[in-house]
Image (cartoon, rainbow, N blue to C red; front, side, top):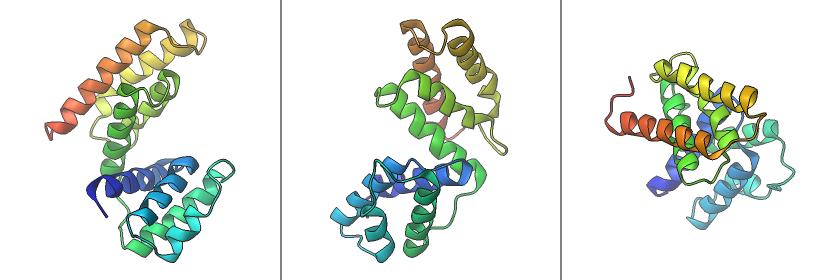
Length: 163
């Protein structure tokens, strides 16, 4: 398995630990694992699921079976936060998730054990602005501010100093 697939698997594993894995991402990941030659029973079972109808609970369960089959230990909480925060920031910057979704997903920085906990007030302020002032619909200014926060988070993580 290449590093990119392993990272995607670890991100979904972290999501399942702190909240829920994304069913669509989990199924697509399993399909990509099959293409890469990782073809255990649990991988096949997850890849055979419908990305549209798989429920989060079942995605979590199937993903846990995949990680167990591959011998991947569950990440500790700080690592899970870092994995989710980095993935969310990358998705905000490449616009593969909406500003509205990204603003709420970044609340992960406030999770217990987070090395990025000091950024929770900034995340909360942007989310409050989104909900209270903009009625849940992001404008260009909010996107710019959220992208700046995402770049800040990624710079801190890349420097190896999340705090």
